[in-house]
Image: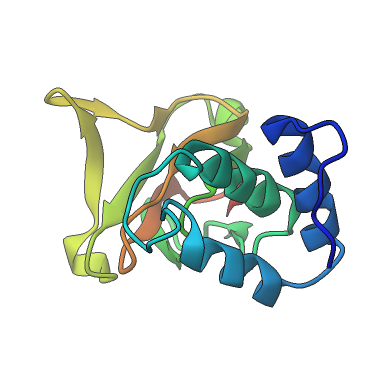
Length: 167
């Protein structure tokens, strides 16, 4: 492939390269990720690091996610734990909830496990306060981006509520 940039601009070159790689394969993208952030001597850093990392984010965003959405309608009475959802690393996670508003009570809560087990699925917190709790129907995009390889996501959902956790 020819990745020359007639305009000599890192952003324009990155966009052209991203378009060529997206029309290519995931293998090409993974080959590029092996060199991202390394200089000509193979050391981390160097002037191209920012451009390559930006380029990889453009490539990842243009390819469909490989994760399988967690979707369904909670059943069984009361609140149930649904999961696991195993996200693709480095991609944002979205959530759709339907039917919670009609219940008039209850909540959907996101849970996360760092070892992939339901037993260790814990509520999300930020600075000691619980987050990831929804009390009405919603369509949330870009909630979180997973970075840990063994992490899984779970939902605590009232019976009768339809949900979709996706990328």
